[in-house]
Image (tube, rainbow, N blue to C red; front, side, top):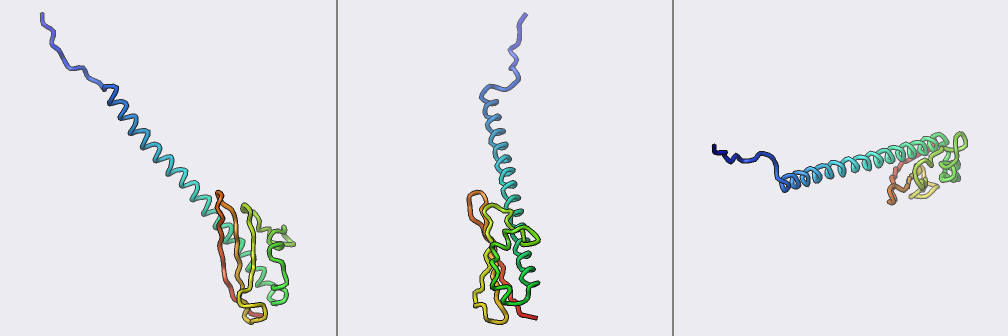
Length: 136
């Protein structure tokens, strides 16, 4: 009796290695995208916190409404102090709050520039807001 030579079914070792390499390449791309999303999420959260701190400082400036009370204040110290004596704005890494008056302190309306600077993943980030204030 004759036995027929039938081709063996299955994958060779080379085919399995190529398939595994393609799978590893695809998974590493997904992991890189996933960690990138975490970094973007952290950055967006920090930007939101910094925007809230600018709003906090601007509202305190608006509430004072007298130019001498505004220009004489050390806003960096005020922002770092906890409420009710300050704004409690130093929650980001190495956060600083700077308030400057680009057009001088005697002009009405007073031009106010608030800058928030912080560290994020070894890089310095900042956000600025400009406002005009006149005495009521």
